[in-house]
Length: 488
RNA sequence: CGGGGUGUAGCGCAGCCCGGUAGCGCGCGUCGUUCGGGACGACGAGGCCGGAGGUUCGAAUCCUCUCACCCCGACCA
Image (cartoon, rainbow, N blue to C red; front, side):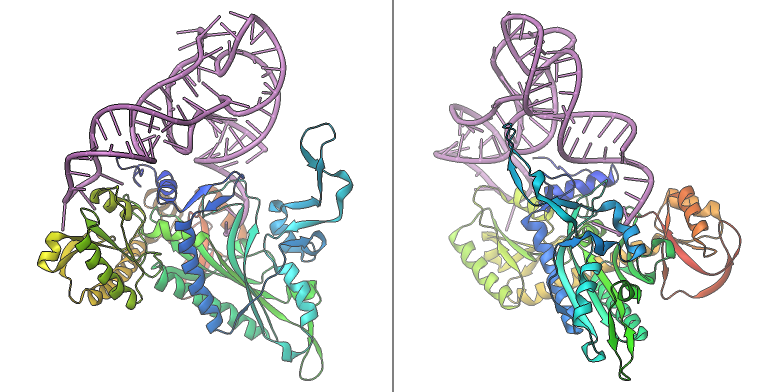
């Protein structure tokens, strides 16, 4: 079997598809725009989910579950919100099937038309705020810090596995607060969690920023985001955290009595990350040999390959090694497959992104050593089998750190400051990446630039320094730079 | 929703122009030889050729109509 993955240089888009399919992460399903997440891909998502869930709970959030279906009328209660999602909603109109009297199989029973159509949730603000109305009466009921792990449906015209599918898995947090300041703080707390998760667990550096009015979530007062840079120079919005002000409280009449027994509308936030993160993870680290996974999220962190194949003395050594590694909390597998040869296994484990591979043959046993191969650099070395666990623990950390450092370096090399429109365009066309430039702050200019360059303002970085300058397009005064990029 | 493409074995494809009842590679099964970077041989299993009509003695192949999916754009996490 020859190498099957299209190189990134040749066709980045095809490379991505190859990785997803060859590493058995996901497949297209029988349903248009929907993917089947396969065990390898789902295991990564589970690791992401578990860690995020811990982080949410550590900051006082609890999980709940709200319905998949939303009455149509709910969606139209917040004007901007409807506008944002109306074009991509799946609508349920009937609740029963019947046999076609003409023998054409099963048809929709026309007598089972719903009084009010149901919308398959594209996000749950409306159903949740309708519910919160009944839950919140007093300031003592606040804050309400709820998250849900769910699937949502957005009827996309064009889909890409993990990055954009009609149905996807995510978490959506919906919180209610007594004060504006507290809600704003919540938005930022979550943004920090997202950034920390992306950088420390995914080893994917992100920029925390604020979205422009044009890119803001429909119904939000302010949208914060984390933006990552992929290897092809395109940006990926990896997570968003919204300060919703009192928009939904007003739309759904959610009021509470404050300490002075006065009625006030509550302040809200919502925030989410999705299986899109898996796509971001792939495009941040992987190479032409396949998937590269950060150890903290890798379903299998260490794989032991017997050379040339399982045999009594090798099995024994491998079992001992596994016990030692497992005792240290390391996720380890022993490849006992009898029918493929070592070379094939090496390639296979590299394809699916196992961070460390240990090779053990009789020669190694005689020398009291194992061969250690790391996925990120493809380096191999022989290490004494005694005390190998400590070595592996350190190496996993080192790989995690190396992936992050490498990505930070890449991003630094692909972040360019420009001061005129020609440079903006040529940088976007040549090396891509983030382009830092002055902008006059108007949606009109933003859209014009998008039209001319296909790049959008990814965000206004939170740690931006103020700097006087002139908008790259209009020359009007600007007080700070913003980040432009072509994006997924 | 526009443009392009593809539907034939689990996967990737050929066959279609010039109709005669389906083939190749990989994978799969059994056996043997191999085995420190993607092994080889022998034998074998596996397909109402996306669907529906039509033309014809005969359709994977020609005609009509459909359905699905993929890629590229516009829109979006």
